[in-house]
Amino acid sequence: MKQTTCIACLLLIGLCLLNVGCENSGAVPVEGTVQYQGTPVEGISLTFSPQDDSRPSSGSTDESGHFTLMHTIDDMGALPGKHNVTFEWEAASEGEKPSAEISAILAKHGDGGTPYEVEITGGVTDLVINIE
Image 1 (cartoon, one colour):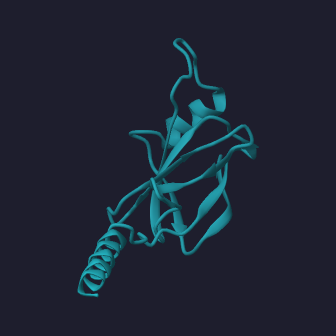
Image 2: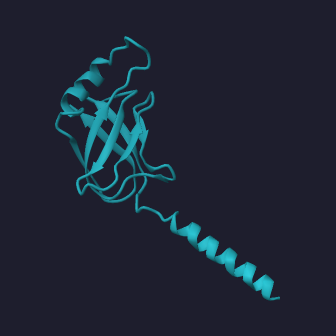
Image 3: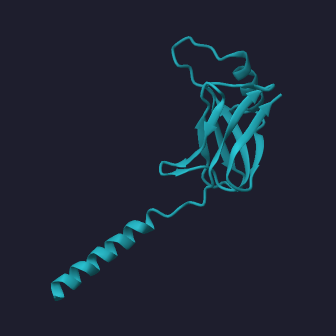
């Protein structure tokens, strides 16, 4: 009986320790569409960096301009608050050049440009980032 109780206690302690590492970060689901002058943009990566310097979230657009943010490997979304959004593009093959839409977005809101600002107040599935 004592051995069974001891094993049960050890299992309980182990589960508690595992749970500490799996806490939710507080991120809320965030997905939407990136557009340039109203047209969806495919193949661009975006990073949502909280203005309070906490952990950023990132995602990439598909053929319809749709993105879903990932905060950590196990936690989708972004933290609530104000974010600076920056964009990046990576060529799929050597010599590939970005589209005119992607070039315009990168010039305005890419690395070294002015970040696009977004405030996340709760989970959102229809966020539209329209770059003019």
